[in-house]
Length: 97
Image 1 (spheres, rainbow, N blue to C red):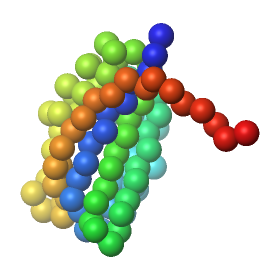
Image 2 (image 1 turned 90 degrees about the vertical axis):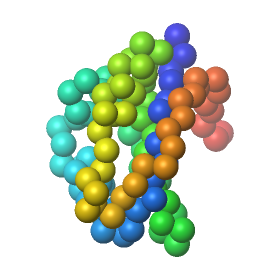
Image 3 (image 1 turned 180 degrees about the vertical axis):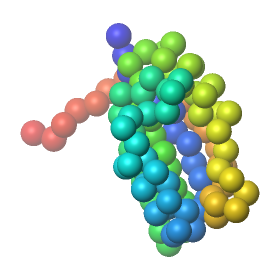
Image 4 (image 1 turned 60 degrees about the vertical axis):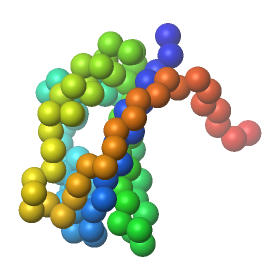
């Protein structure tokens, strides 16, 4: 069974990046309603871009988690704004030899 990922793109400043990384790092796991297996936070500090990738073990988990995450938005005063969300099936993953 393939894995799936939800890729959320944000615009955010340095303090917003620090806040989201701190929040995720201090949590015991994903939020309730998000059956994610792994999270990856990427940043392009020069461009103010933040990408959050959440990996799910099934399409059903992706849809459940995505619905929960779609209902969440950064607060207006957070310095962060969601720009887009995409969903993908992981069709190949390979480690370097």
